[in-house]
Length: 360
Image 1: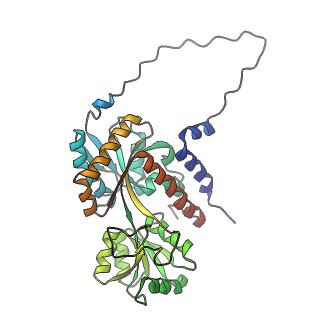
Image 2: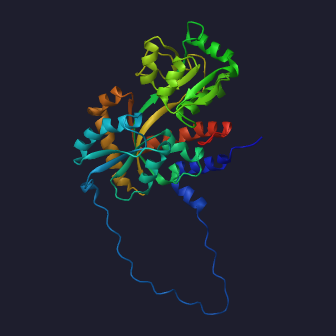
């Protein structure tokens, strides 16, 4: 049995997420003791006086200039919409402009790498599951390591995906449509917005838990092209965000089996969960979250995280998130770190099991 080369990476990522100190100990090299030679050991070289480090501004004074939120996807993407939903309320809370900047490309890793390398205490990223957990597993060549180079600040929101099937599916219930899809075997195909995307990994997770679901993957440039192909009868299934899926389902153009979250979603309350439809162990949600560089002082991280949580719980940002298709789910940096560990285990396991690579 051949293992995907990223199996060596997953334990290291999980160790770093669980305990950065332990990770440092395992990766540092011990300094060998001096060897006695009987000769006088030269004294240390004279060192020039080091310039004093530039002091960070007191937390009470932070932020001292506009805050940048980098987005790794184009304007109008779900990540972009979540950032713009919190930007104005966050600006009011912190007393500085909050600017959203789109740095699209390479599945969001270009923006994430810029955040990881930032040192000005005012550059952050609004990121998704892939950027914050499995990016290195999908592509070991990316320039940053999510578990080591990024610091979680706060969770913003979550959303499930909706498992939809073609209108050609036979039956009248979610269970009957699932049985129809299973009976198609590998003659059926499902679409996703690309290899390694949540729509791809989520369906592979469902296949591994459903006992006999054999649909084959067909990547598309994006969800709009995928939906067009499905309406034309070229695809039999897909995992879509609720905002896109429910437009088609309510118009009678697709059939919905259920949502991938553990509980029914406020974004599609009429749909059952996949558990209710008979698929156990395939729970998955997309998330949108705020992260900064690993060098971010904890006091700055906590002040920004508290502001994000406050504007989502009590302010206009909550309704804005719901309007653009996110379930508000504010939590602390530690809550976000816990979710990152869980996603790394679940999605990382699927990546290794299926041998998935971003360029495959």
